[in-house]
Structures are given as structure tokens and as C-alpha cells.
Image 1 (cartoon, rainbow, N blue to C red):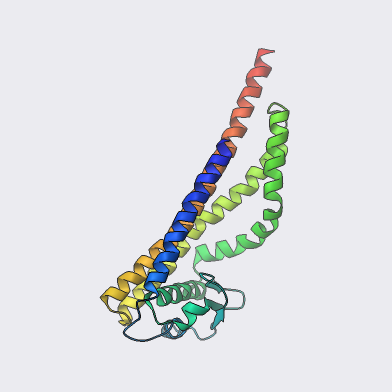
Image 2: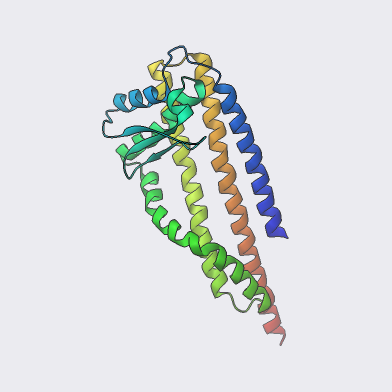
Length: 238
């Protein structure tokens, strides 16, 4: 029940943060820029200002599906962000350019995260199976059989590491975006602060996810250490 409570709280907070984020983005999507530059134009200008000419800016379907792909060097902006000239669209476009700039500069945390992605893609297929079956066997054996649970916890530990590595990467990309927006005067005071608030809210989704993963890991470790302690006491008794 403790595990489901932790997951439930994490999901609940994530839903709230995402709802606030979407509402704010819709509100800020009504605040049109005095410069009339679209998300696509903002992205292309920011890339050019940093001497990046081998990254393409593309339009993709969906809402808040924006991302930078380091493999094919593309900045993928949702249709609304790509076409609109609003505080929300330029915040997202500039943020994704921040990731492209990190890639160009060889930002160490980004390189580390990119190395972890193939490992996580492979391990994600086994994490839930290992955790669930590991806990079942662990409980049924009285804490004596813990190999599968150890494997599951080890795999989940990689997820936690990945989540916390992501945090400074996202904050750094936002800082690069905001610094450029401020220095290039492509936005006025009100537009800048709306863009900043948008990026801060977006970052909160990563914070909630990271600490949700950490809470689950702590729970798994407490079950494991608690079960082993009980098993040891039984062995000492007999």
C-alpha cells in the first residue's frame, strides 16, 4: 500500500503541475509579441546567433511535444509553437535551441545523458517485471531470496540517476534561452517575464518526476533492507 501511495501522490502532483502548465501556456499563447517573430523564426535566429547552421527547425504534431533530437540535429516544434508569435511559443523554441547549443558545446551532462539513453531503453523493458516479481519472491521467501529484487532496484537506480541528470540540463537550457532573449531584445519586459514563468513551470514537471522516482527507490530500498534485517534476526534466533 505504501508503494501505491507514493506512486499515487507522484501521479497526482504531476497531473496538477501539467494542468497548470497547459493552462499557463494557453494564456501566454494569447500574448502576441511586439516583434511578431514566430517560434520558427526565433529558433532560426538563436541558432544563427550562436553560429549553428547544421540544425534544422521542423514542425511536428501534438501539444507540448517539442524537443531537440541530437541524432539528426533537428529542433522539433509543435505546430502552434512553430507558427505562433507568442510568449509561450518563443519560450519553448528558445529552450530547445538551448539544448542544441549544449550539444554544440559538448555539455558534459548532456553527453552523459545521451550515453544512458540506450541503456535505459533496454532496461525499461525489464524494470517493472524485475521489481514486481522480485518483491513477490522476496516477501514469499521471508526476505531470503533477493537476487531478482536487487536487479530490479539496480535498474531503477539508473532511472533515478537519469532523472536527476536531466534537471540541470533542462535548467541550463532555459537559462541559455532566457539570456539570449534578454540580450537580443527580441522581447519586451512583460514578454520576457511571461517566457521565464513558462520555462519555470515546464522545469517543475522534471522536478516532480525526479523526486517521484527517488521516493520509489527509497521505498524499494527500505523493503529490501527491512526484509534482510528481519531475516537476519530470525537466523540469529534459531
